[in-house]
Amino acid sequence: MSLLLAMQGWHVEDWRARFEALLPEMPVVVLGEPFDRRAVHYVASWKHPPGSLGGLPNLAAIFSLGAGVDFLFADEALPDVPVARVVDPDLTTRMSEYVVLHCLMYLRQQHRYMRQQPAKLWDDDRHQPAARSLRVGIMGLGELGLDAARKLQLIGFDVAGWSRSPKTVEGLPTFAGEEGMAAFLARTDILVSLLPLTPQTRGIIGAELLAGLAKDGRLGPFLINAGRGGLQVEPDILAALDAGTLKGATLDVFETEPLPQDSPLWTHPLVTVTPHNAAMSEPEAVAALIAAQIRRLEAGEPLQHIVDPTRGY
Image (tube, rainbow, N blue to C red):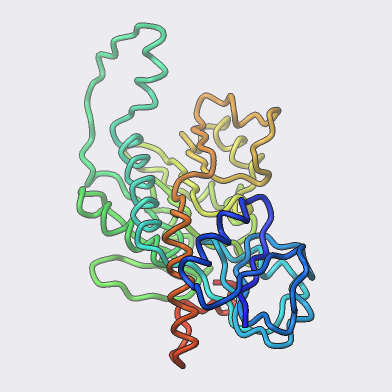
């Protein structure tokens, strides 16, 4: 049996070396090179060409090499086998670092001071609200969302969460579904999006959602999207910023990546752009997690972190 690497845009030979070191007993083959399709039991993929995983009669599981899996389910010919996602404690910590950093930037009004510095403007209004006076709403209560929520609560932020289906989380107010969205948004000064990209969530951060954010807050409302670029409607975000209904946006992901040079997001004074690096997994950690999953299956143990194809996460 063998492991097939199916990826685009990454250094495939580096990944082959990682897996050969972790699974010395298992041949590692690469999509695009000659290999025995009958021998492939496992696939590790990142944005493989659609349809390229067909004709693998003994395939047992597909592993995403990144945190997202939307690219897998965009392949209409994806084999009907279990799909597992990466759940990496290091990635979770990195995402929480990003969320906490940018929530604090808005809390402490750092963007305003950075705009004032080139003009050598000493702002006499130096009052800083307490973290407890800002209400953070996290969309997406998976591993990433829950960890970020807990760390924001430790700092003192008033945190709530929203998910597509109801969730009960001790110590965290939660809202769910369309019926819970309006109340969730109305108490949100900083909206943090960590949702997966599915047909149901595509374009969710649009004009209607942004118009529902809190209008009675001490600061904001602000948007932080570190989930997926397909969640946001960028012209609607720009329109909300220009209208003053949104006071700032921090975007790590975009509808088109890299962000095109002519995008107005680059130069808008209320937008912070980061290059999709909020939570970069260490390749060695990802390879080790996948190798451990393969060893579990070979030992007759169940696969972990399986994605529900009907929900897309």
